[in-house]
Amino acid sequence: MKTLLRVLGALLVVALAAGPAVGQVTPQDIADSEAELEALRAETNELALQYETAVARSAQLEDQVARLEAATQDSQIKLGVTRQLVRERAVEMYIESSTTQISLLFVEDLEGGIEVAIGYLEQLGTSDTKLLRDLEVVKTEYERQLGELETARSEQEAVVVDLNVVGTQLAARLETAQNTYVGLVAQRAAEERARQEEAARQRAIEEARLAAEEAARAAATTTTPTTTSAGDTTTTVVGETTTTVDGETTTTTAGEATTSTTAPPPPAAGKACPVDGFTSFTDTWGAPRSGGRSHQGVDMLGARWTPLVALESGSIRRMGNGGLGGITIWLTGNSGDQYYYAHLQAWAEGLAVGQSVQVGELIGYMGTSGNAPDYIPHVHFEYHPGGGAAVNPYPLVKGLCG
Image (cartoon, rainbow, N blue to C red):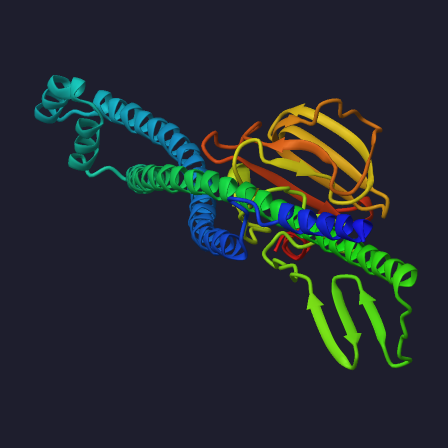
């Protein structure tokens, strides 16, 4: 009997000691964080679309301004040459002219420039009209190009201002979203720990109950004969207890674990999202870039120092630091596919060329190295199936990152 009391006392202690902890994460806490993260995702996606549109337009205007500057320089040179020809022809005709009045007028105003020379040729009724027409055509084209250049420069300045404003807003929201993401990950981890602790508590209670029953049977055997009906059964299931005594059934169910479905999704087919954190991106494959280039990847935007991981298991093929890409990584997957990460803030500590990495393993951090604007950290990500030419990576990362 003393043994029975001790066992029952232990059961009570276990049950009381394993009560809910103060400040425990609740399903509602997680739901609230998920809703906040989804709202931030919608907001950052909209800002990212505006930002990428401005980037493309800025690149177009940059190329347009460069072409117009080159064209106006050529036209300016051509205009200068044509004007010099007009002056020289006017001087020749002046020397040959016997019209004293016009000659004196020209000599007095020769310092006045090309307009005087043109007027002189016109007054003499010269047959060199082609020279004058050429001058007019060159001058008109030059003035047209100057007007287009001024318009393009003005638009470019406005786009750059918009780009800076949207980029700054986007960067701030990405920071907030990353903090929310990290908090949600911590909440899920706490929820999982609580689920495991609850499962352990239920197992401890069940073990104590079984021990108590065993002790009760032992005590009854030594004191009073006990007759057990063939119909009396006891059934035990982990997490759920069903007891049938004298035809009465009692079922005890352990607390059910809650699950979350918000991104990031679990790795699919041995692959993981290359950004281990909050990221926003749009399909910008082929979009205009400066220098007449077209975009050959996807820009995955996020907070500075957001972890970047191996999309699949493989090895580090190349590491670079310089040029347009800044700090870069080439990853060759076990599948033979290759992946290019650019504009990193830093590599993961100890990362080296030839090193084997596992899917989801840390390889670097998101940043702004290379020709990336300082106010909008991102990773330029490329996908090269079989190590060949780049293809649009958007469907791949969209499926992995949500």
